[in-house]
Each structure stands twice: as structure tokens, then as C-alpha cells.
Length: 259
Ligand SMILES: [Zn+2]
Figure (cartoon, rainbow, N blue to C red):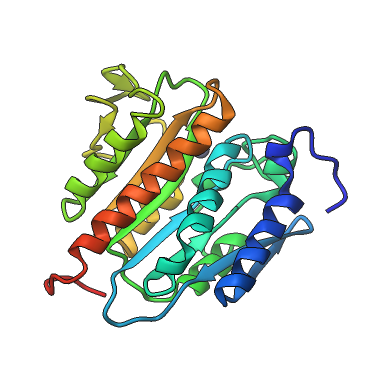
């Protein structure tokens, strides 16, 4: 961890320190899931309550999308007391090298988010081991897009559709929705994309898609426009997560779902 960060948003040691502080306060074990290019990949499990749903959240697989990682932290810092009763699995930053170097890729120039089919990849193998066999009610992957003109989200699975729509509406109060009707070759409406097929441009398997095929009832992938003001983007991620969490809490008493 000797590289100099170009901007506080890319200061991985500072981000990691905040997560370690938070874990200490909340009594969580921040697991050192892997070490990639000299940086720790942290993984966190908030509880193991059989009465609560399991939800997955991650950020930072693309290092040039820093607001996602800081938004995830800001949300967890605000809600850790409630999260202690719930089953969250969190990866605060999946590509620290990329974050420090403001690079989408890893140190080898690979887009990690196209390689989740590679069971022996040093990150993917340990990530999968940490996940175990847990089924998630919802997985939330946080991203940014430099082409975006507002917030937008990919979503698959019907079980969490109302939650996700509400959360996107909440984020859209911070940054308006992307008005485009086609985003990355997929039909979009009000910043909402429900991809029925794997997009043509996708060569490997992204994190969210692997989770959808193997672990999740529903997935959502939030994108904020990385040309917009940093603090607003952080806030959009934070309020999105807060809204998803509030909806899940509201549904928690209903029995018909997997823990
Ligand atoms: Zn991304």
C-alpha cells in the first residue's frame, strides 16, 4: 500500500481504515478474503440470523468508479446498528489496486468484472469460498458509468422489483434518471433496464450475472454518472442502499422467502 492516491476518492488506505473502524465498533470480523497486488480484499458478514433475509452488496470492482465504494461505506456507517440483526454480506472494495490507480482494470490490465466464470482466478476462487452456498434475496452491485447521463439500474428477478424501483426513485432525487431509451445496446425506460438476454458486448461473466445464475433470487446493478459531482454520486449510492434495506426490513416478517 505504498502507491500515492491522486485524489481522496482513490485513497484506499483511508477507505480501508474507515471499514476497520466500523467493524470494530459493530463487533464484525472484517475478513481478509484475498490479497491481490499487495492489497487486501475485505469481506464482511454482519450476522447469521436464520430469521432474516440474506443480502449481498459490493463495490469497487472497477477502480475508476470510486463513488460506489464510498457510498457503500457511508451507508454502512449510518446503519450498522440495524445491520447487526440482519444478514448482509459485503465486499467494500473488490479492486483496491484499480481504486488507487483510478483504473477500471486490475494490475494486469484485466477487467475483473468479466471474469467471474474463472473458478481458479485468485480473487474469484476466494470470493466464491467466502460466499459459500448462501442464497441471497437480493444482490446489489454498485457501479459508475462515464457515459451515463443520470442514474440507472439493471435488474433481474421479480421478488425484489418494487424495492428496487423505489430505491431508484430515491436515488433519482439526488441525481436525475438517465433519460436514454437505449443503454449499452439494451432497452431502458426511466433509467431501468431489465435485460432478457446477455448483452452482445459481454465476453466474460460479470459479478452480478454470476450471482444471478448461481446465488440470487434477484439482482440489481446501480450505475451513477461519473462525470457528475462526486459527493452527489456518493449520496445516490447511499440513499439507494438505504431504501433497499428499508424495504427489506418492511418485508422481513413475511414468511414466504428463503433466509
Ligand atoms: Zn463498473
